[in-house]
Image (cartoon, rainbow, N blue to C red; front, top):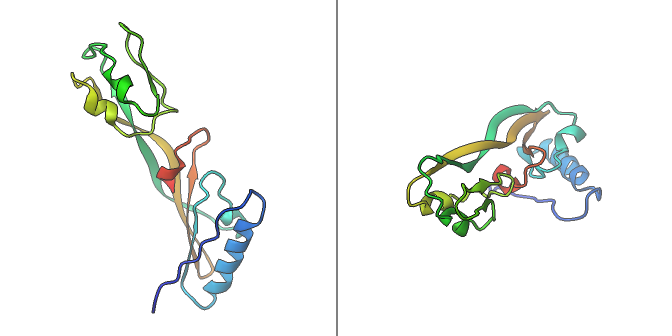
Length: 153
């Protein structure tokens, strides 16, 4: 038997996407094996509509750089390669890192000639699972203030 995928997407907030998705998933789960995925990590609410208990299954992290300023020669190369403009460089000073801007690409780590930058990470969200009658559920939630929702989805 072929697997069917149905997506409810697009539309302005409050138009009923989650209502339609949960109702359709629940109706189909009476006769089929169904997995409902709530990919709206900025404002997940399918579990609320179904009054479902969620179980945390994974913490989602994003790579961010960490400086060893004893090794930094203040060349500015890290700032030059940062496409997200998350590293501010003023000649003769240590780079200033703006973690909220960082995309986690790692270009600064590769570009640093003295290996003064290493990998670190920050928690940006959580993945959850759940079950409602015969309906299986997966979803995620982005931490407030984070912008990298694609890592959680």
